[in-house]
Length: 93
Image (tube, rainbow, N blue to C red):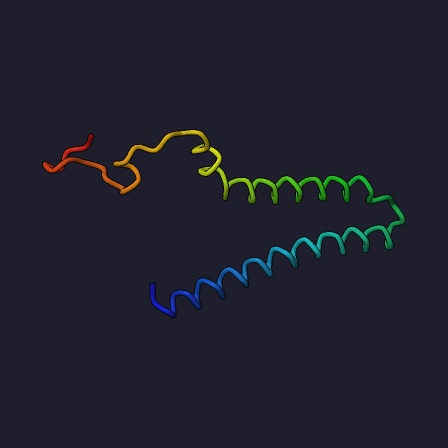
């Protein structure tokens, strides 16, 4: 909750995201260089990698909304709204 933690979290996220994007760019650049060097088609590899990246991105975006999707249409009891997990004696309901 402190300001330093927020800065560290943002820097960590930014560095990780940058590394992932540069890695993807590097693979596409490498496939292009392989084609230039060997004149062998890299179309299949490019398509396969694009499909892989698309699936990974969709899973990443989907997992963020998974709890929300599961809770659609499920009525919430008043005790769950306030985070209550037990009664006055400390036992679980």
